[in-house]
Length: 227
Image (cartoon, rainbow, N blue to C red):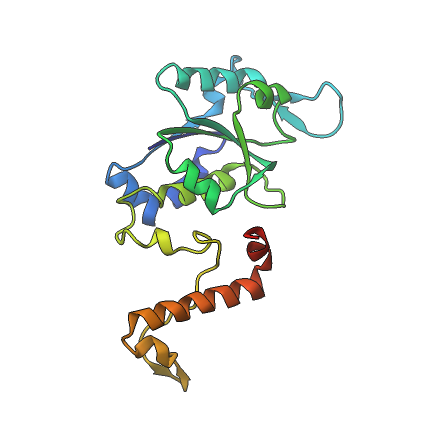
C-alpha cells in the first residue's frame, strides 16, 4: 500500500511514523508513506497557498490551484483508490472504514488548515471525507496520522501475530474483553480463575460474555447498531 499525504507541516509526521507499527510496515516494504509539502506546488515566489474568502470574514482559506497541481502530479504516475480530505464534517472514522481502506492500493490524504479549503476542491478533487471525532483540530495532520495508523496495522504481515488485528476492539462490533498477565496475584488483586482453567471453550465463552457486558456498559450504541 502507498499513502501520499499532502500537508503544510510534514515535520509533524516524523514522530508517529518513525516508531512502532508504522515503522515496521515501512521497513518490511508492506507500506509506503510519502509526504508532500503543498507549498512546493504554489505558483508565486512566496509559495502562497492561502487567500481571503470571497465572502469576507475572519480566517484564510486554502487555495484550489496548489492542491490541484499536487493531486494532478500524483495522479499522472498512478491510480488512486481514494482522495481523502480530513474534515470535521466527514464520515466518522470507525473500524469498518479502516477495514475497507486497508484493501486499497494507493491513497491520497489531504490535510486542511486555516478556515478550511476552497469548496471546489471538495466538489471536484476529493472522493471521500473523514472525521476522527466531533471536535476541531488546528489542522488535518494529526487526523491523517490516526487514519494512517488505523489502516496500515491491518495490512497482512504488519503485525507479528496475524490474529491480533482480528481480535481488536470493534472488529466484531464489541469492545475487547479485559486481559491479564503475570503475576497471578498482585496486592491481593487476582486474575479471574476461569482464565487459568485450561479449557479453551470456557475461556472463549467468558471473554465473549465480558465483551458484551463491557460494551453494554461503556458503548451501548454499538449493540443498538447490530439490531
